[in-house]
Image (cartoon, rainbow, N blue to C red):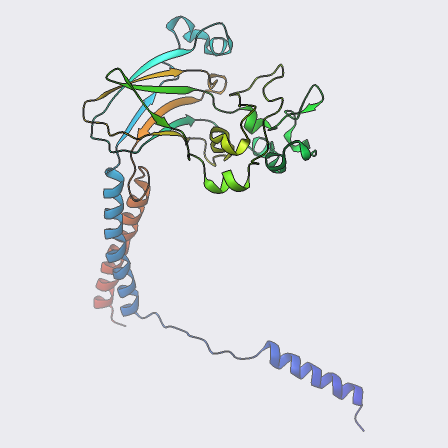
Length: 319
């Protein structure tokens, strides 16, 4: 006589086995030499034209790059640049000349570029409070902002090292004795302005302590309208990066000479950083970037070479 419990267990085991070991319809392609050669040939014919089009778009972008961090320090102060930049009694104004080599069609983007600046450092990236940026002094848990959290017992808005180190060099551009207007609106991401920075949150006790970092903010303007801060707070993943400063909405002709009057305030000398000013047009692909085009061409050429090699091998060793 069979045990009913044992029988029920056997039925459950059988059902579980059928469920876990069920056979599903599947496609199992066989990569014959013909298929392999065709795939590599197809990849080569696709990637090479895409790479050439991408390179053409990149080469159509006109850039003017000027490094000014060394030239804007007087020769007498170049031995000790750190003392120079930290001395508020020394004027930091400087003039640079940028010559237009190719016609530049508006809008012309103005970037400041910083090199050897590690915004991706773990402690630096964590030194902020996203909820405080959105809600202001209503949010009290700002321990992540240390050591730039409080000033005389009062909360600092915005707190943290990222905001504290805000870039504060300024630029004006003159062509033929007429100042070029720089549009500094809409330089930050719209999603950041609308959803990450409060429309009713104003700076409070910012850069008022004994330790001053970078730029200052306007106390009467809400954080959502202070786009310099919003651009700066979107930290870069690489040690060399560019951030948008504004746009020139006038065309620049060949051989135009742009006089740049700037204030060299930002201290990159303490860590061996570099500062550059960049004027750049854009294409349908964005700014100047040859990497994508070169990568596509290399992949396409490699695929064509492999297709030819496999074809020769297939003709010689058909089996």
